[in-house]
Image (cartoon, rainbow, N blue to C red; front, side):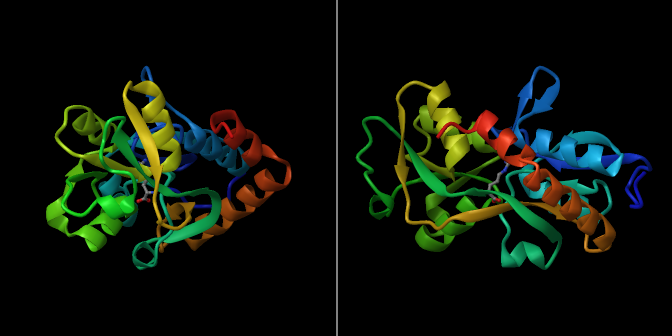
Length: 227
Ligand code: ARG
């Protein structure tokens, strides 16, 4: 039985933005993917029922702070800035930002992005890096990863900067796109939890450690991520 307090007793409410395969995406009415499976495994350990709420990525932290959700699992990168507003669990995966371009693009590397219009997912690290490096004027912030890729296909942006695994999924699902590596460094993904609920962070960390030790986390990652 769980010793932790949650927004709804007996339930672990997770927020995510389900346009980010293979971490979270919709399968009919269900939200599936790496984060859904890891959250389910953690909820099982805590003796809680898992409930997943879909929302804009840039609403997640405010929803945690206002007590609408207990945590987010959303391929969310641990950053110093976010740490001022939420606590993070230990990391369960890593990501790296890449550039998606059309096959016939003249963009060959990050050095070619000056004066281009870069599509990003609103409020993500890719958005922040590109705004810092190229100026907010050169960035078109779209609601989510799927809409950013649509904008690229429609020629409304010149490229999309997004995390590598979703990039692979989008390139696989759409004709005529390819991936370039960027110089951006590796990021750690973790669950975000309210600063008012350190007991929950501790319980999630304990569950996560057990799930790492018994191979469950690696199994879930391997199921969705091809080498
Ligand atoms: N890793 C990036 C970040 O934390 C992007 C995450 C986007 N996740 C999502 N579910 N849409 O800013």
